[in-house]
Image (cartoon, rainbow over all chains, first blue to last red; front, side, top):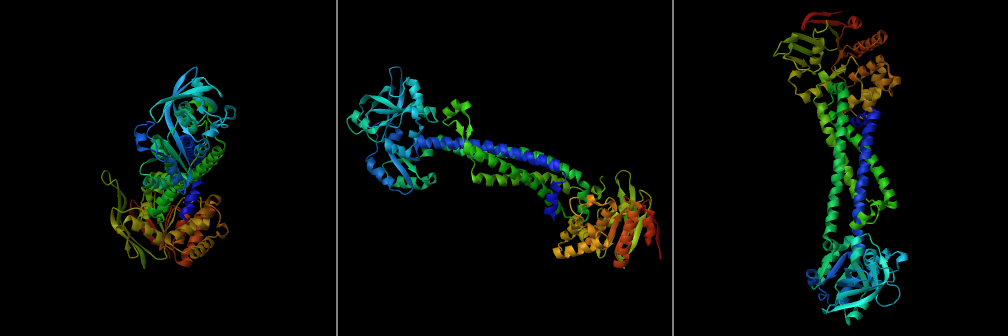
Length: 406
Length: 228
């Protein structure tokens, strides 16, 4: 019956209750969308970095990680790759030659990171090929020698176009300097302007020809079928490849791991602040309700309603009020997030800033199911905490005085 | 047999500044089945007396025994439970819960007592029938007249099967016809079911129906008349 009375009491003053419910609904909807955009932004950033640059796991010679000299190569890379490919849970593996050098055009020059790759195998690990618009060539077309794929930022810097020639100068594994002319066959554009400005992709076989021998493998990149299997497979690889250093994506780019961790906490802080602010409105409303119903509360205590029941009644009313607003807010927020998550939010007006940050101009908001569960607990807690002050106020009433208040 | 015994009951307000004796050494007893009116001018101590009998206020001196229980020695929590199980209240301004129907207003007292649903339903219908509101069970107080609301309040007061009912100016907010009707119902309940009623009132119609009239003045009993 307390449950029934509490629920019916909410609708005594419909306008007032609807105002509180609307405030909670809008506050939560806004908060949820803000949180979803932030989460989506970080997710896209992380996904972009993994898919275009670093993959899930990378294997290097331990010496190479300390000092990125070309001579520190992985020994017997074919065997290593074959071993990794056989592990269940591994989706694909590719090898890379990593060299630091200069790219020069007739107009300009820039320091670059040259990645010697096996183009078909690289496609199975990274999706850089998909970042090349149709009008900007392709991912190593045909069997022509000395093709190079560069980022659009570098192309702008060197003032070159598709089919232009650039000269790459680099130090080989033997310590000698080499240079060769390459023809631009593809210009990619990822979400990261830094990556686009500094990365140059060539065929490893071309590097072998230029250096007159094996150019060496400095990096083996591994993609998992499921990102969550990294904690299982990484230790296995570390044990099996004692001469190699196996790093996961967070170890390779700690700032990405930090960003993910910070955002995981920040979303709760944001929603917590919103709920805290809403709690003041709820407390105020409930105090008004207790004040208005002083005589009735006095009557209830006079006829034998225990303090615990009075407390519970006020508590339930507050929780109902908060929860109705909370559920409506979550439903509205979830609906909007589902819509925006499908269609995306076009932020091309701030494309420059987003590109520097390494994020696409279209953001797809996202929220996990676990977050909704935790949010439900937070809303219920807000209701309970907001009820304490009004309920205590009700308990302090003396029935003999309360029943005479007009 | 006395169901209520009041001994040397005093209530003093503003004890530390200028003491005002709302009740001053009152000795009184009520027997089961009485239909008693407490009358007196404003400020004579009627309401204070009813508050004391209902365990809503504590005396400055003296004691009140209801059955075997000295209610002045009960702690707050015990007193709430005692009220629930032993005393029925009828207030001047009805004090029904506006969001509940007539049936629910009567029933919730029994639910607080832990009575099972089927028994609650049966007794609620009996009580609403007894006060002539069997056709208004699902009506909310806002849709009932003042007289009907007060009859629901009487049914609610009876719901817990109390030892006695305290009615503070029960007819004050009613028109004469409704007041007459209410009094007839209460008188009938008293006569046929031996329910004890104690009123505080200014209403001559209530006084006329009462079989005992206790008159208070300045916190003292100045007359205690029983009619045959």
